[in-house]
Length: 389
Image 1 (cartoon, rainbow, N blue to C red):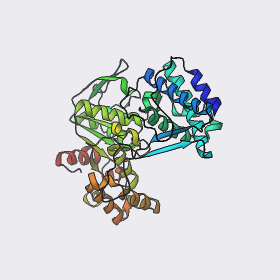
Image 2: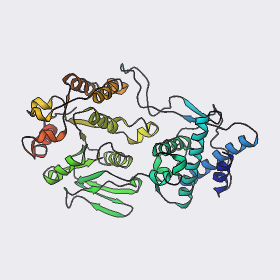
Image 3: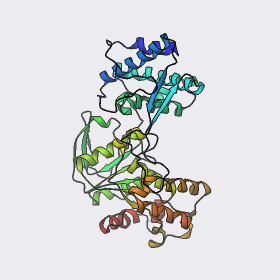
Image 4: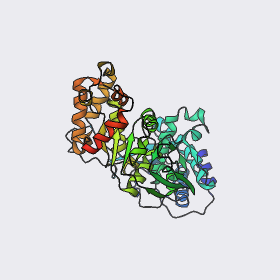
C-alpha cells in the first residue's frame, strides 16, 4: 500500500496546494462545488495521496470516506426522500478490513492511470485501464467500481477523468452539429445512421428542424425505421442506445433536449428488461447514482409497447411469450422502486398489468401484419393521438 501511494504522489509534478480532500473517517468533502478541470483534479489527487502518506508515516491506518448516492429505495409508498442530488450516508473504506485493503489497492492503481491521462491530456477506456493490471483487477467490474469511487472522491463525472466509453449509440434525422470541429450533417440524408459522439463536451453548433426525438431500444428497430425512411417523412431525430444506453448516448440525448427543447418519446420491448431500459433513460442507473442528475431525462414519455397493445393491434398468439421466472422476479423488484409510485404511477400500473397477463412481446411483433407497420402507422398515430404516458 505504501509503495503505490508513493508512486501516485511522486508522479505528480505540480506544486503542493492547500488541503482540498481529507480522507480520515467522518471528515466531510464538499459536493460538486469545486472545479472539475484537469489542473484542479490533479491537485485533488495530490492532496488525497499526501493525506494517505501522512497517515502511514504516523502509523495510522489510512481510510477513505465516500459519499453514497441512490436514485431509489424499496419503499413502494413513495414517501421517502431519495434523491440523486443529495448523498444518502457515507461509506468508510479502511485498511483494517482485508476486502477494503484490496479495494484501496485497486483504487490507487486506477487513480495513478487516471493521473497520467490527465497530465498527458490523453483519453482511455475502462477496458484500457483493466488491461494495465489484469492479474490484479481480475475482472472489469472491479475497475468500474474504482472509477465510480474516484468520481465520488474527486466530485466529478467520469468524462472529467478522461475515461471514455467505446460509443455504441446511433442517431439519425433532422440534425446538424460539430464535434471537435468535425461537421455531422444528418439533414442531408435523414435516414442514414451516424454514431453518437463519444466526446459530448466537444459538441457544439447544434441545429435542427425536428419536431420531436424518438428513442428506440434496439438497433434492429432503428434499422427498420431507417430502411422505411421514417425520418424522411417525419421531422424527427431517432436515437438508439442499442439496449441499455451507455453514458455518451445519455449525455448526448440530454444535450439535445437542453438545446432544442423538443418532446422526447421512448419505444421499448413489452417485457421487464425493456421497462428497465426505459427507467434508465428517465431516472438514471443505481450504479452511477452520483451522476444521475446529469444523465437522466425526466421529460421522457413512454410511447410503447404497452401490454394492452397486444389486443389493440391484434398480435398473433405466436408473438406472445410467457414471462419467465426471471422476468417475474425482475418485475417484482422494479415494482418496489419508490420513484415509480412517486413520479410515474401510470408506468407502474402498466408493469403490474404485464405481470397479471403473464406475457411479453418484442417491438417487432407489432409488425406481424405489415413489415412497415411501426413506421407507417404505430409511431405516427401514437404521437399524433397522444397515445403515450
